[in-house]
Amino acid sequence: MNRLFNRLFLVATMIVLLLFVALWQWLQLNHEFSRNQIQQSLHQELAAHMAHINPLLSQGITSDAALKEAFHDFMLLGPSFEIYTLDPDGKVIAYDAKEEKIKTHRVDTGIIKQFLAGKNLPILGTDPRSQQTQKIFSASKLVNAQGLHSGYLYVIIGGEDYDSWQALINAENQPKIWGATIGFWVIFALLLFVILLHYFTRPIHKLALDLTNLKTLPITENLTLPDRYRGSLEIAQLSEHINQLLQDIQQQQQQVKRQQQAKHDFLLHLSHDLKTPLTALLAISIHG
Image (cartoon, rainbow, N blue to C red; front, side):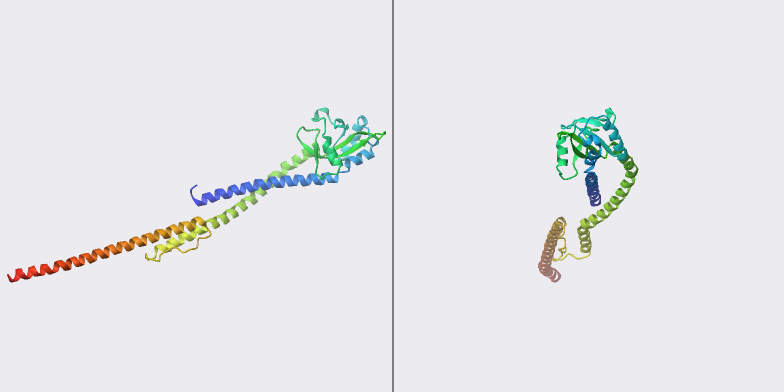
């Protein structure tokens, strides 16, 4: 892990994984938002149309048993719809489903009022068949024969059957999507790693090349590394330290040379000073 290659590979891999997760989440959320917006926009007048064409709903009736048959017919034409009538406070009154399927018996009417006021879509409302999930819907205000507000017609768009088919399709297509996505990101990661490796190691490669060339040169007073590492602060500082060390070595070498020259001069003078007395003594001994 101390090697630069390993560290760069780890960093590149982590960056790619984080980018992949973030992009995947963004694409999923954006796809879901766009799908909900399109579906709700296309079916915005669905509840109003159902209320208009049904004699009971058009009279503001919300609890008649005959509504279940009408709901059943509507849901045959649109299997992805789930239809409910609500009282003015949002209490679920009539529906075509088994009792145990209804998990929430009250719908948030504040959201319905936002929808009827024409707020920006998509607007998610209460799903009576779930305690946590919210779904897009269409809604219409029901008015009785006396002109009084009797409740709402509330239509979930993309109900339980739709979710079941969507989950089945996702189970079939998800491995293909994941395989293609992972393959793309692996190629992207390799390309990114190569680019990062080239970018980060280029100053080091230059420094290694300059040091190799420096080995073949004699030590002189002007022996320094070239100033071409400004793209990397750490390598530039390292080259400055190396140049400082080279200057110190050159100064020490010059000092050694001066000491050797002084030693040589001393020995030369010493031999010259000793040569004259020895010659005189040798001459005396010969003539004596």
